[in-house]
Length: 380
Image (cartoon, rainbow, N blue to C red; front, side, top):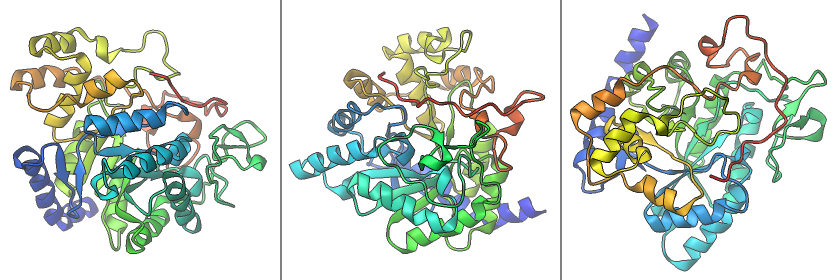
């Protein structure tokens, strides 16, 4: 009954969501969608997760020159300061005005306590050298790794370390991540709403939330509904039910790892390799397109957004080559048949927190492992 009431209460937002998808395909501003609160957002952006320091800034500048108008960042990626320097160069050159670029960043897990939310955003604004971000999303629903006792602000390093060292990835004496089990994302959301009122963000959303968690935020929101949900999604993890729910309730679904993160450092032998899938490669050959372009076009024709990451100039250009052509209905159906529910980013080292979102994907008798002592930067 509660879910039915929520869906009825969001009927107006559902109309907005349908209009947003229509606008994307019929508007003269190709490649943009309109969120349920009226904010316009590009459907494709440059992802910066795993982009290494020393290469991220040039990647951002090249992406902007290529035509990207959306950047997806996060303070725990430890590269926002470099992005900020690149943006100052772009804005200073007169190539682009700040208001012509859509910047999305994320609230880190260590700063879910309401009194820490604004401090987290202020660190991002300082590093990016901007006065506001267009979209700000809660990165994960679980306040882990987190101590809850003090804000954990980026200092140029995202290396996991003992909690006494002030890291954004605090670890307990027993080797497990610190977990602030008393923190809940509904209180965090209320602090997120205040950021909109303060003019520091234009729209707010969620990331890595499951359907029940999205619905809980929607039911509890007092001022602003979540307009964006960014989750892992690709042809091997299609999230059909979750996307249908988002479309019904006015949430724009945005895919991270839209190419299945072929450069992930934790890849194991035998893991599926999406861009080597023979069906996708065959479709690409029929359009004279790469496998990556086929997959990204598939995302867009589903009515979802995506943020492919690359620091390589020709790949940045290739990933933007998704407009001006279409996949046929039969090709969309073929790709739709590739779904296998394969999630590459479980981050099970945080699964001890009650708000961990992917419990159903963990193996039977799962034991929470020690915190990994590595970062996730990549040069590809």
